[in-house]
Length: 423
Image (cartoon, rainbow, N blue to C red; front, side, top):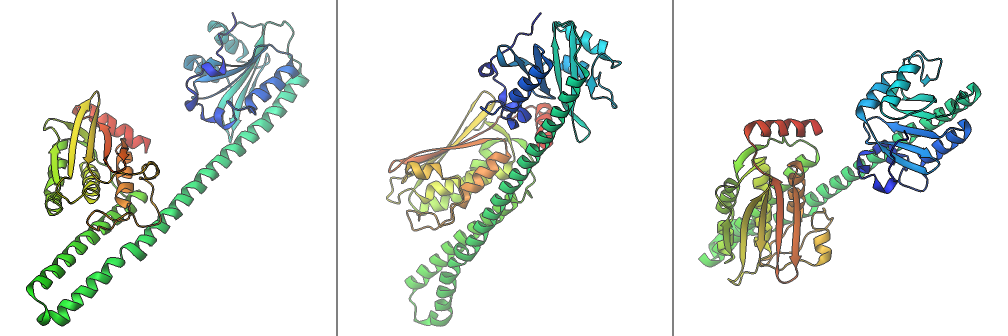
């Protein structure tokens, strides 16, 4: 019986084929296809198959072309066990040739002859190469030797491709780190230093000219100093949190808790700001919704989103910022909606990117760096969630955070262990 093969466009698990994708399996320069066609012609064999361990497909080249065969983990393990340390080739002279052949036939891969080669890179097996058909004559030893030479070159190519990919990833990580460092120092040099000009200037006025000031002037200066100190402290807090998150120093500790705990804290912290800007701040988070997340990170996310909404909502008494949540399936959706200035499509596309410039001023002249939203994205990612934004210029903005719903204690522990293992 011939194997039931799939066309490449029918293979729907390509994202799990990391090494195959590295060799361009979906591209016109498919190195696996090129190698198998060359080897098949050299051996004059009907079926040529290539597989990598832990990938969902074995790749076949036949008269019909390049096709996929769903990987059978049981068969793959049985075949792999037939190889010995001192021989990467299984031919009729190999002590496990008959066993290898029986395993193939047991899984309906009929044949009269076969040749198998273990794919070994740095003394570790990464897969196997198998040729088989119904021809009665054996493969010529000279042809087998040529296949071994070709395979050695192919494995060297794979090793180089893998090392190139690792170097590329390391370069991209280093570039991102350098960009983050540039942003970090830019904020320190400008956004964190700038408020101190006002703080020092007005504090000098109080220190040197207090006797000449009336009560209203003193009150105005005190209000300015208080507002500037608060905004600078918030910036510093976000800056330190962001630096820790970028450096991987945050401890992710998810627990089951009521989402209302976060919204209650945020309401306590930001109600006075909302009152000062004559904005209605509404908490519509139901009492019974529970999530599985790091409570400190999520509180920071909600506070940053709400603070940002208040920043860009008009101060004419008509503005409103609403915190809401709902549960569906195994997820919880948390949203912060404002009736503020809104954003352009271009601003929406780049809203979670750290920019090397100060962000727009708020409706009361508030300054910012856009760093809070970058921190939100980082914290949501760490909690295996998703953050989205919808906005229309002049009509307002909604930020939506999707998080895992609270688990029972056993499931929560198992999920946390899986997540730690993934890191």
